[in-house]
Amino acid sequence: MPKFFLNKRLIILLVSIMVLVALIGFSLKERSELTWMEKFAKDTVVFMQSIVHKPAQLVAGFFENVNDLRRTYEENKQLKAHLEQYVLLQSEVESLKKENERLRELLDKKESLRDFVAIQATVIGRNPDRWEETLIVNKGSQHGVKKDMAVITPQGLIGKVRSVSPFSATVQLLSANDRQNRISAFVQGDENVFGLIEGYDEEREALLLKRLPYDAKINKGQRVFTSGLGGIFPKGLFIGEVEEVVADEYGLTQIAYIKPAANFYDIDDVMIVKRKIEMSQEEEGQ
Image (cartoon, rainbow, N blue to C red; front, side):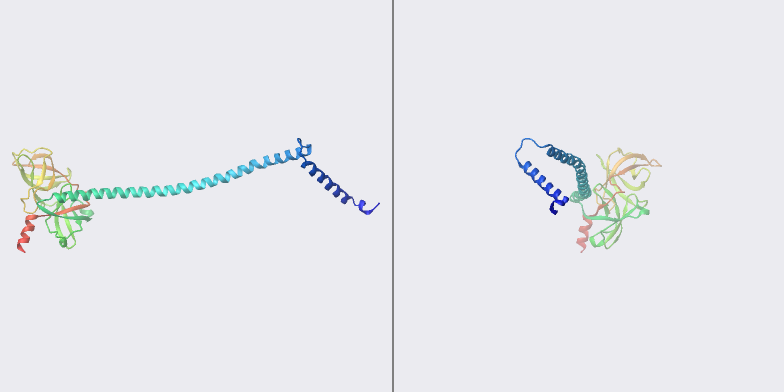
């Protein structure tokens, strides 16, 4: 027997190749049915695919959800940043709106001042120890400010200039505890009733209008203005409204409690006013 046929491994290899070629050729033919071997192989492959597909799908879905969460987080972060910017912008708009309203009120008040000129100023300081008495504004003698000039807000009179430096001035409020802080005023009515603003009642937060005639009929809610008779303040600056009228300790005159029109605690912008008659006298003297 030749040595070629004695090599069993070579024979098995050749037989396997022949069988494989035969199967391939057989499978390439057009057939309506598959052999049991093909069916077995196909089912095995489908089964293995189904086993591998589900975990692979779960893993792919997991990573896709992670990516979605990351994108959602980044979008949420950006939206939050935009929201914070919007809130800040809205706050700035509100602040500018209030400031604009304040300045418009000051402008309207300035246009209505016929008997005196006005110098607009901004509050730049306030002494914490004397909060109810003084404040500092950013206009001084270089801007035409002088001692004893009246100081107002759009709501009404708040005080007078106590001292002046070149670029700032100290304003004494009507609420200051100073006996020399007197203002000639009148209660507006069919017949005006004249008196003097002297003092401030801290408990009632009211100005004291003293030396009113004992027989004068004054009612709650009547408005009080500067009379201009003191020689310092112009006439017609609004001070406040009457809250109550009582007799003085001797019964010879009456005292009226006046609720101030202006808020002495919240002051940002003011106007310092000067009588035109004083200005015309200065011009004549020059």
